[in-house]
Length: 479
Ligand code: NAD
Image 1 (cartoon, rainbow, N blue to C red):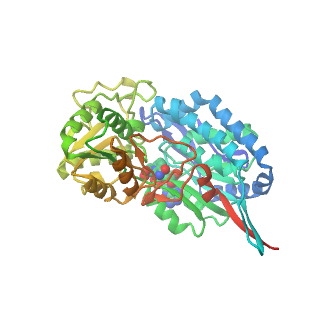
Image 2: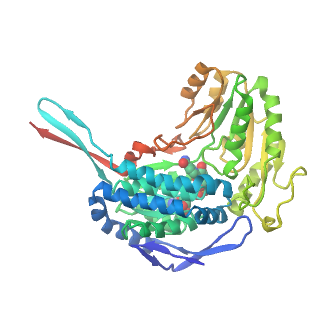
Image 3: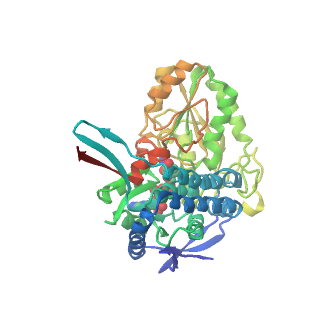
């Protein structure tokens, strides 16, 4: 199968192609066009040309097409989730039941929102001030390989609904579902040029796209290192930067331990641990640490590692052999830094069943739990982005906050305590864009999603998406 760029509503062949492979089987899934400056220029030019007409459509007309795209995605959930699972190794349970349906919801939600964009008035005795919200223009939307379809739609939906046009660049490791998104957008009646998809690598396609003078806003999701590079090279533009994380999951001795354990297991092992908001530093009060560690490892050992197309699988393969090597490096580093390996590892542990033959060559590691972790160890400070949990003891509330904040990142956080005052205090004190109290990560599309410190700038979701996709203008009329 060949996957081409989508520029101005037409499939555009690549001058080169690269392979995308199935990380569970190593089978080649498709040859994908590899874009560079020429394709980026053509796509930005198409988006620029399509902008005035699309921005000029009354919002209810745009909303109809955006809603239609959501409905088409909902209709194609089985196909899209199978493709996403093949391309990424994320389990069919996640892609089919959560991630692809959520992508459809992103469109229906922003279809409703775009008709409600209103302004503000600030009357004075001498002037009537009011604000207008204009679409920004051509936006560069760049997505990583983890949950790629959901992440792409989280950007495309508000971007288009608010009247902008877009050039979407997916990760070279997971391009397949976005290619379908471009086709479905045309089928939904979204005019040619409004959504363009350029495939390719970061340096060749991503960099010229971000630096293009006609691109007015960049919504980027990816690593902190790439985010920094883009901010330095792209010039003055609107930015939304959704970057890496190493989020604290804080469990006090008065927590509901069964629920906390379930949520802790979910937050580090679901999505194969390849989740930006993973609760990867599990801070546990010293008085319950030993018991928690034992029970957490028992749960981790029972997780089914296997074929991601199997409904019963919880942990599938790592996205690529490079990423597998990175995760293995940290698993091997843990004991050298002084951590105790409670379960898991780079090879199949004796308690775990054999992998099914179909995926025997896949990029697997097993859910890994390290105890006796010091927060200054590399396994605690660096984003591993795999199914590797670090259990770190703390003494009291002040110590928990100190450890939670002793990190460059600030994306998400989790606090578990039945003491309501303490839960609120700690939630307020943790330096992060989001905090979930007695809960795993649960999304509401109205919430501001994003991080602080090295986890990014800007927020997306609900009216927070105005920040990147709309330009407020104040008009002052002398009375
Ligand atoms: P990455 O930074 O390597 O790549 C992300 C995207 O940027 C890819 O499409 C890539 O091709 C492109 N890119 C690379 N170099 C570029 C450049 N110089 N200019 C423009 N584009 C460039 O990240 P990844 O490995 O694909 O994704 C994993 C990272 O994403 C993790 O750090 C994870 O935490 C983060 N992430 C963050 C969120 C969030 O919402 N904060 C969500 C998901 C993933």
